[in-house]
Length: 88
Image (cartoon, rainbow, N blue to C red; front, side, top):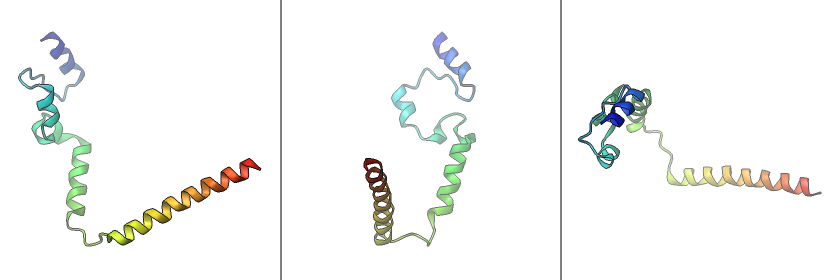
């Protein structure tokens, strides 16, 4: 129990609750955890989900694949050009 109190002292936003196991805490949703609702990261994630949930500006699979191929292809072409120029 002393170890749980020390852990709670290091994390003031979390309550030391000996009744929950590690597996239960890992599978809990952020809303179930004490202090998680006030987390800036959680609030940002929720705002982004709300903002993009009904966004009509989604790319088609074809445009997404083309973007990935062009971007990655350009990167590897640049890496290849650098390696060739260094090898000379």
